[in-house]
Structures are given as C-alpha cells and as structure tokens.
Length: 268
Length: 287
Image (cartoon, rainbow over all chains, first blue to last red; front, side):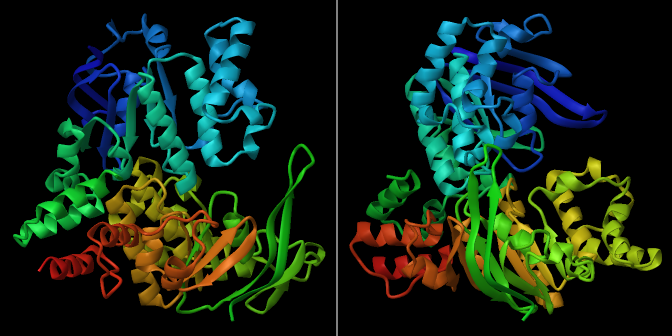
C-alpha cells in the first residue's frame, strides 16, 4: 500500500525558475526511502511540500489516502513528523520534557496520556534521564534524539529526516542512525533526505534528484552502484564500490573480492 | 610565531549556575605561514571556544595568548591601550554557517564591509572585492547580485571572500563544509588549499570529517573534553592515536584497507592514502 503518492508535482519560488519539475513518486507504508541529490537539487523543498509547508504550483500529493489541500492540511500534518538539520532550531521548551510534550499539546492529548508517552518515548531514545534538563545543555545528537521522541509521541506514521545528521559528530550520527533503524523495525515509514551514502545504504529505495527532477529511482543496491547517476548529482560511490568499479574497468574479475567489497559497502 | 597559547583555560557558566570547563590548560603555537591545520574532536569538546580565542574574540580566564606580539589575558578587557581590532584583521575567523551573516544589498558591498571596517578606502575595498570573488571561484558578475538569491554553496563562498578581502595572515574556518554535498565539499577544500599555496598563509579548519583531515591536513589538533590531547601529523594520529577514547572515526580509506586485509587475511606492504593506491595494492594481491 502506498502511504504517499506524488503525482506530476511542480514547484517554483519565483516565475520561470522551477525548483521541482514534474515529480512522480510513490512511497510504500513501512518503506525507508532516501532522497539524495546535490545542494539545491530540490530535496528539502520536496519534504516541505509533503508537509504542506509550501504549496505546489501543479500536481497532487496524497498522504494515507487523503489528498493534501488547505482543508486537509492539519489532518495530513498530524501523520507526518519532521526532524530538521539544525538541532538548535527546533527547541521551544524550557526543559526536555516540555519539548517532547509540545507537539502533543497541539494535538490536544490529555495530561495523563502525555505523561505516559513522554516516559515511553524518552526511554525509547535513551533520553529519560534528561527530562528536567534545559535542551541547550545537550549535545547535538542528544538534541536530535529529543526531537525524535517528540515526533514519536505524536504517533505519526511517517517521519522525515531532513539532513538530520549532517551537523552531528560521528557518535551523534551513529546514535541517530540506530534510532532510525529501530523506527523502521517498528513499522514507521522513513523518508531520509541526505547526501551521505553511508546513510543511504540502510534504505530500501533511493531517489536521486538533479536540478529539480528525478534522475533515477529504484532499489537501493542498484542506485548505490550507479556511478553515472551519483556523479551527475555531485555524489560519490562508496569507497569499496569505487574500488570494485576500478577492478571491473581493469577487467579483474574475482568473485570473492566482489562479495567482500559489497559486504564492506553494506557495513557487514 | 604568530599565535602562542600558554596554559589557557576558559569556562562557561550555564543558566542553572553550573560551570562548564570548555578549555583546560591549553598550550600550543601557530606559525603565520605554511600551516594547514585541522582541528577535530566531538561536539562540545571545546573546538569553537578555542578558535574564538585565536583572534581575541574571547579572552582567556587563566593563562595567556600572544597574537602577533600582543599579549592577551584576563586583564586585557579593562586595558584600554590594547587595540584588538588589528588582530581581527590578521586572524580572519569564518564562523559556521557564515552565509547567515550576509546582510548587504549586493555581494560587492558585503565583501567590502570588512576591509572598510579596518580603514581600507572605498576604492581599494572595491578592488579587493574584484580579486577575492575570483579567488573563491566566482566571476565578477556576482558582485552586483543580491547575496540572498544565491545557492547555499555560493553564499558560503561569498562570505569566505569577505574574510579574504581583509587579507588575513591566518584564515580560521569553523566547519566550513558542513551541509555541502560531496562535490561542493571537495571543491571548497581544494579552494582553501589553492589559496594557501597562492598567498602562503596559514589555515585552520574545524571539521568532523576524518577524510578531510587525512587528505588535506599537514597538522592535526585533537580536542577532548576541553583538553588538547594531540598535536601532530594525521598519519601518526590515525595509526597510533587513541581514536576510540577521543571519539574519532578512521578515514574511510584506512578503515576499508584494514577490513580488506582482515577479510583477505593478507597484509599490504604500504598504507594507501587514496582509492587509486589501494587499487594498485589489491591488483598486486590478486595476481
């Protein structure tokens, strides 16, 4: 079942300079989709359109069977959570606890249920010991985990990570990746906007944007290995695959080597 | 010696009254020419606090820093005789996300702002704008454009041009490539390297990317919990340093080479620095 359907979607901020052109994309329930592309390729604009933060010039977005319109905006938004790039830009509360509660307050969830969910989801992201702390004292990775807890508490089916790890150090990044893997196992639909191939490795599907258009989309393994597509969008092959391509070009075929390089690419 | 840190410590007071020690007893030197340094360490390890000391934007609470012969310590703020402005021209600091700090109507005015602030005439500042816009890989037509209609990568370049226009001896950049795609990141780093060669300045770059460190740096400084725990070559850091303790990754090329050797149960004679060198070694091993 498709949880998101995007049909013939186009968008421009200014006349004659389209940011997205004729995008067609289906995302299945429970799928992990990575959206890759160069800076300015339209990745983040696409996520803002899905969230209804921007209004499309043409085309249609259907979320969980509901066409996104001004009337359905809040209903659609209640199904989608988004974690942004800069962890410092998404804090409103005085304490971690307030922050996790913020989204639920908008949904008018009653007090008792809120307390239950704060407890549940702060434990899920291993931030339960920080509930009374001011968010600004946390590390970047911890802040992003609190943001995730806030979104989980709103019980959304779809979570968008908009370059959510790009400002974190390696430890912070790994902890967020671990969290996303768990969410996926619990059945969430994940849309990850990134240009880090090491993150894209974990997704089911990869969509590559170039100058506002879908350059390629398909099974993650196929796209990861497609040098032409990646290079065309300022991206790079993972290092083991780069090596594999060099071996292929030199006509050196060794099955064991091929297996090993694929395992290394997939962090196995 | 351009900058000399001597037993510098600095701590912040948080809103709840607790004290956070950002720098602990830091001593090291930076030369005014020929250095290409990367500064690494996990978030909160003190990297940004350290570089903000390099042009006296923050002053040490204990210890001292000598910047181009001027000694900065905790008494500096009250001493009206010490002029800090010239130091900020000598040591140009580019903050993280400098593109948020563009504010003028045109790129040209934005670039001219810094030099004019340091007493450079209107005409000279204009000339400098023409020179530096090319140095950052953009053509002169950009000068008349509004900074707000540029892409993220272009904005970054313009804000770096603004610092270069002050003709600093030492260029300090706080995570200049964060948020850029791989090609944009490489282009920007190559640019810093070219400028470094061209004007023979010293460059200090804060980064989380160990590939950048291994590929570009001559010298690495590692911060861990406010302490300077390593000062030396990238090679020695990655082959002998306590990376786990300092929460640092290995560069991808070293990590993959190690894993390959393990899986193939062999040992290469050399340590490859890039994928081409690794390819040659693998080719040899498969023969």
